[in-house]
View (tube, rainbow, N blue to C red):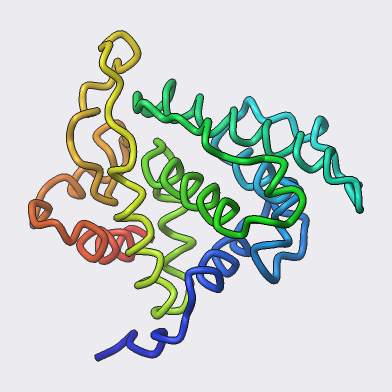
Amino acid sequence: GVGEGGEGMSAEETIVAWMNTFPSVTVAVGELMDLKDGVALLEAFSEIDSMVDLDGIKRDVGGSWPMGAKNIRTCVTHIESFYREELAEAADLSYVDADGIAQGKSAENIQDLCELIMGCMMKCADNQTFIGRILEMDEGLQGELQGIVQEVMGRFPPLDDGEESEDDDGATPPAIRSSSNVSDDSETQAGRGDDDSGFEVSTEQSMRQL
């Protein structure tokens, strides 16, 4: 069928291609290790988290990995608080080894951070923007991203205390489609949204919306 051409795509290539869809990212990203200083990660995350201080990013890291590690730690803090405060999910990123990432020892940890950022973007109020960009990517890449997104969607449990979650849909599994607080096209709520192929359904719907 269509879109089968991407079977040679590694997760790394997929994430690198995705990182290159961000107008906010000023770094040339050709491999995961290009993200180890945290600059591109913070730039990408700034699109949904206004708390990211772009002027505070340590940009000329060069060989000085401690500066890169500081960026990574800042990024981890932002991701964790976004999950907790915006998405009411109990994210715990204490396992992330910022020093190891900045020293170029852990592509896995970099990939993990990219996936967590992807999770935030797919669940945030402005998710149509990010879904729209994915829809412009190669179909093989779209399929790979869909797999990554589905894995990251259920990674953190909802917060126990209900005080943070004013929007009452914290418990529903987040298929990739407009959340109820998006005012534009409420028809996205209707229709065949109940099977678990949320991505394809909403992909078509987003295509129509675009």
